[in-house]
Image 1 (cartoon, rainbow, N blue to C red):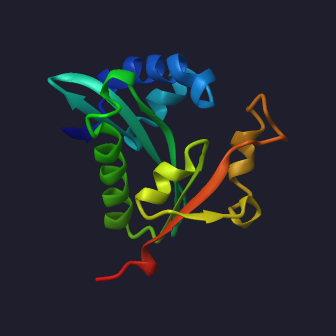
Image 2: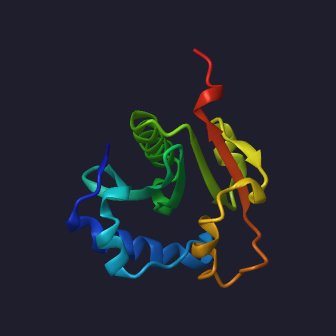
Length: 154
């Protein structure tokens, strides 16, 4: 089950990001930032326990970013990631967002969900303010992927 995060989830979100920051190349976030951005987060629960998180960060009237996407190792084959991504994308579509991007080390995962490769230079310059806090800046080894709702069939 996926649900919107509530304030009580902030400590779990913070711990999950800290736990996987090095391996998944997530940007570490102070707990205070998580509290102030709690409305961006979704939580996936399996058997009543938090199994993963995802955030949908709005950049502009038509663009958002998938960030802080973490699934606990024991839940990676249980569909938690797909459920989280589907929930975040549904929220973006409901809000009228037409493009959702991610900077990721697992572009194949996103491609399976309809994302296409994108040039980092095509993304809004606002994203680079977050990149300044990354230890790999300016030598980013992540791939940019983009989902364009305007290109959907149906």
